[in-house]
Length: 254
View 1 (cartoon, helix red, strand yellow):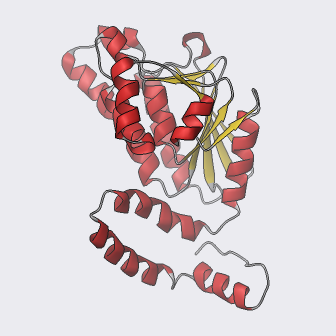
View 2 (cartoon, rainbow, N blue to C red):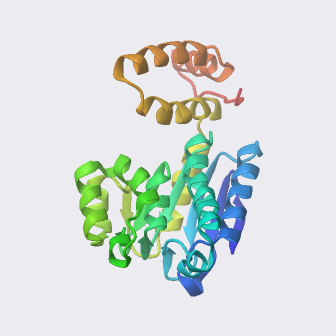
């Protein structure tokens, strides 16, 4: 259901239910959350790429599973589902979506929730819940933060798809690449990130999400105190010395 590989200092998670366009079900969610914890705790890994096997990135929730579940079981399922978005934001290591084909409903939410997204030119993004009488409420949260309220509302309330070029213009994806190159480029991106100080982005990434929802002046004062603390890390002091001494820094990740 989910494949895990190590590519040097990069973790690669592959959503692997190609027969149903990688529709997410509960066993799959459990594996993803377990792997997130393993990756976060692994000091040898500096970043994570998520891709989909077969013809699509992810077609959303498995509707058969939802239909067969009781209301309380459905709530448990959606609680686990949003924990994927939550854990991505809390994880100190950057998470990159490598997207192709259908990226729909919860799959669109997953791409939006990742820190960075690389899309193949054949990627299609859609939140079509209204077409089956069920608004895409949970994908809505990361989507509107990624592309803004007006365009998110249009996608959510019409269910219309957008292509990768429009997704790039809206800020839903960072880069659009030729068909079949999305994983390769995402891994290159991830490797580049892994070569930076992990202390720096280990502090900065969680702060990005926390302060993004703060009132402006409070965020500034929080940032002031946080950067004071961050400047005392060994890597920060090494980086400053390296600039002054005109050499490359030697990261110790502490």
